[in-house]
Length: 409
Ligand SMILES: *Cc1c(COP(=O)(O)O)cnc(C)c1O
Image (cartoon, rainbow, N blue to C red; front, side, top):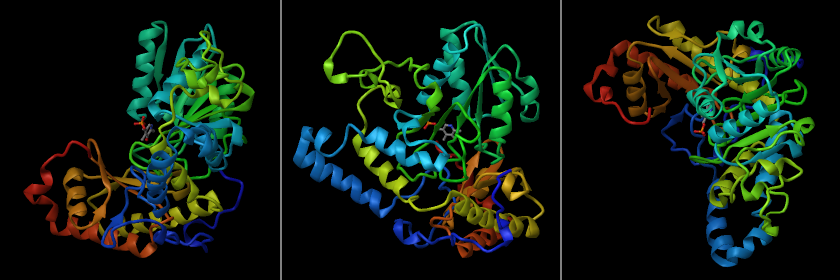
């Protein structure tokens, strides 16, 4: 799949799992296997938010938009995310949420394929991806959202397909699509691709340019450690930048916002995808989070993650027959998280959390664990696996308090 020969889960690693642990403020008695859902706080993010609030906002006030580079932050941070996803610096911008960015790019892609009315995706895709197209359908009643199982997607592409919308690494199972193969098939059918990289960026190597991907979006608060609700990013391949325009034509996507013209003229560059004023407190945290990846090779990091997840999977499945791995068993066919099916997955996850092992539950019956080598060591992962096995063997998860459902799982 990837041209570079990886050492795989059993070979020597270039990135030692847990090497950056000291950069993060993680409780010492916690094994955090949920960095795929909310990345932890880094010292540099904490300091950046404090500095932005007290020194920049507090002392420089409105002049900060110029003096502290606030207005350029969406492009600047986009340029820092670009190498993580195989893109050019001027193809990525940080703005809005992943959900909103899906809407913007999908709407623009549909306008670029007049006469075609199908958005193709898979059942069980992350809900927001599907919901956003449902919302678009209310504006474009001719639109058809067609959901086909992943192994039938290539065959379902046809002359009516406008857009292929897929999540590269599945949020629940961790299954990974072959971006190059599906993008090529999509182009052959005359359609565009929109990849959701929420579980890919900062997790696995992504090659948007090499695979000729058209459009992409991704999340700032998961592997990028950008903080709760961090702004998202979007990617538009250079060859599409003049041809596609955001349907949310806000003033900060204007060619010259401070000309205050009545008529909208989109910026020439990736900045046209911005809508409103950048959320600077959030961007300060995101920039620091992205900064942790400087000098880190994504293949090295993924190799380390495969070693962690494989050790966890082997230790759990080797000692416990009750749980079923619903992620691909080959580590290089999945992202950086794995999920197991168990009838009382919610209760088991709660019992684990009570013992300092933090994973999450995904309805209806999956327990999900993320393996983030920046701050997770092999020893911690082994400890977490043994704890899971023990909780299942003793039935500790049956304690009634673990069955109490919380709003966020
Ligand atoms: C987490 C996630 C999102 C998040 O969207 P928000 O708009 O940030 O809430 C979107 N897509 C996928 C695949 C995700 O995993």
